[in-house]
Image (cartoon, rainbow over the protein chains, first blue to last red):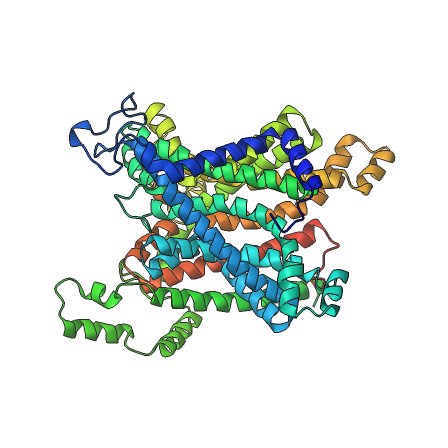
Length: 287
Length: 341
């Protein structure tokens, strides 16, 4: 957050909020765990996530296999850890894409208004008129069953949230005194918009981003769960829950439960972090 | 014409561009689906000539804009086309499957409202209490639950471990006969027929998927109720009402709660839309024969008409729901007129 002037006051405020709210601190620790698992995952896991061993299939959790083994004898723990990278990559790239698209569209609509604003609003309304998960399903099915297309689909359904947020933030400031001053000083419209108005929208965007990351992971995992996107034998939490679901009625719970818990852990982390960031950014909205 | 009726008509007119957009997106999306329905329709043994012929009868050889015009014309005359995988008119397929999805969604929403709204109100009236903290934990944990995972865990607990839930396969155990179709909602139909046994059987099948969906929707509703109630309780009119000597109960429910309801109803609309999406996942977990399962099957085989029908049905439902919500606003808060929006 280099844009918000990082005065000592800001840091002491962050420190104050973190001390008062250990849960936020916890969420940062949880986030660090996720990042470590994503970056160092392949070095940490005890088994090859794809190596099957038929003699060792469907073993319950033990000291050798912490999370048990699946129907092909693969180590569930290794697969859960390895999957972190893919799941985080999908959600982070999707959210980044929608952040960029939403910022540009929303800033333009909020600053210039007029027909651009009207068209954009209608388009966003239309996107939001679909149940978003269903729209994502349709997009992945239409573009083809690949990981990149999950990213695009998730980006599309997230874009309206950013576009609306940025539009509102830009719109209320376009007649502000500092904007007039910047224009009088000879800045071009684009420059005023990008350097003077837009940075004001960043703090609420950070909150939205964190919450959306959790949502994007859920969305991607949901798509793989119904068989769109990531394909076996790739290790991914959604698809692992889907595969494990077939064994749950016969009592082999570890196949579905551990990847499911990992998924929950990730989403929970992002939600906690979003709430914590909101407290830092805007103490009035604390709920 | 009364101003209210006029307002409602005006609001309906505003929905028209959205519906047009949905029709266009639905059409474009399905034409972009990989796979050729003519090939699927012709079967495995077909040669190129017969595939071309089928393409002609299906109208797929025409240029896209012309296909679109034909499609819109059919829609206007109430013809949603025929599903190539079931061989039935799409409208009949949807009509037979929509009640299953709606029954599940509505029961789940009722259930979660019945828990979340009192919880949110209690959390707001006693800030810092145990129930407030419970509400906070539930709200953060609730939004982190992947619906499909909750469903799988519930099946494990209640079907495999405890053995109190029936097998998670569809709306009714195969030993029961479907109740006569009146509304398509098994609970209502069996109750109307006075068949208590079937009613209970349908209810038993419904409980787990409904709880799964309800857990998913609990969090946003409780969160919004709590926030709205907190806002209303700190408003000046509540202080005035207290100062005037009204009882705590009257202040809470007649003054604060009614004012807090507005944002809650807005959230309900959003939650309903999310639920329609989450339905697809829950229906898959519980083999529920709703429109979500239908759509997934149709997507896989590029069944244009079925996918378009599904998308349209979803979008219409959603537009209609928003309309209902807007009308509900004026009932809750008479100060809101449609002219203002």
